[in-house]
Length: 220
Image (cartoon, rainbow, N blue to C red):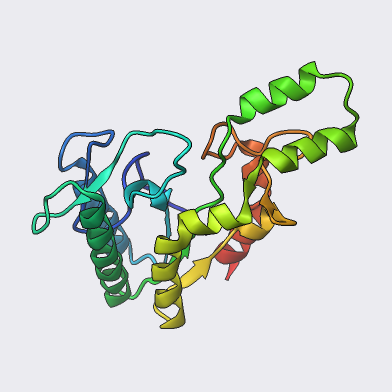
């Protein structure tokens, strides 16, 4: 079995769109997505897994934090706005799925993992410094400071609805990873050790929780 990874941080794996105010010059992300498609076509790859921090590009974030704004644009829709980003995202998702299916590739989409509201480094530094708490108390604090499921669902609503629609139409296989993190109305930032290296990126420990699910996809 051969695995190939193609991607750049800050670029979506969707065809026909570019990322404005992003990490790269205009046209880089659009060209990369096209190269990804051509590689799959030339190599006759049968399974394509699309994964990204999807909400970064649709204007969804927690209001408690201010982050740089990434916009999605297309040649037909160049305006930089949340409304344009969502419209372009929806159109590009449909186009990308159709394009890969037209060359015989099965499409998997991995939904975004929960995004946290606090810096895990700060939380676990405070836990390590406070020797008065036992493990049970520390775990309770971790749970209380983790993002609530309700808030996670709200952040993900726009992209998840599009993914679910495509999944229900049998056009993609949707992989959601919430169960690895979300328990008792909280999506946990960790246990006695963090699952995250920052607000929205898993560390090796957190990624390890997903190994079974990802391996199952690849073994099908």
